[in-house]
Length: 164
Image 1 (spheres, rainbow, N blue to C red):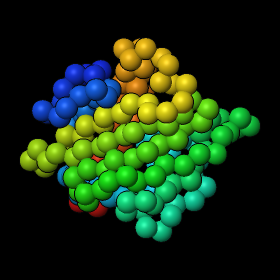
Image 2: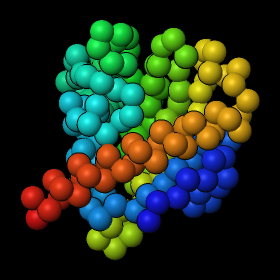
Image 3: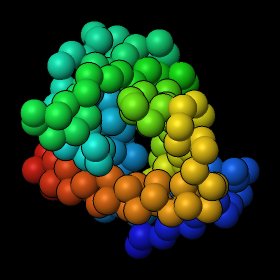
Image 4: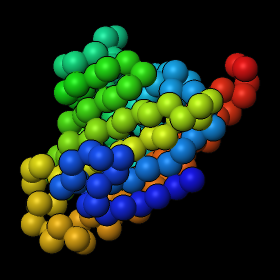
């Protein structure tokens, strides 16, 4: 199941951020394993094109991923930092996306039997992206995160099937 809700509420969470959700056919631990492997970031995050470095403490608070955004030869080096993490439950990131600014992204994992409901809440917090009207910004983020969740499902579900 896949739902894109713009800035409406998801599972009782306060809104104000673009919210997108999908139920993955993998356990929360399996999904967390993908999130916790920083080298997999460009496989599932739309826009991230390559990894340059993953700090050894990833995904602990303060750890950063050093990635590039764009397509060769027009690549911009950026980084994403962990703001909060509860293993197997949630991950909050401060993601830089120059030149458009930076975003706060929260990923929540909610077990549903042998599956996991994954909710992504995201919004721009700095830069020119904040000048885009909120409904338009939410539509773009929802589109992007629908695809990111589709990719996360591909990775987590296939790894889960392989390991299980």
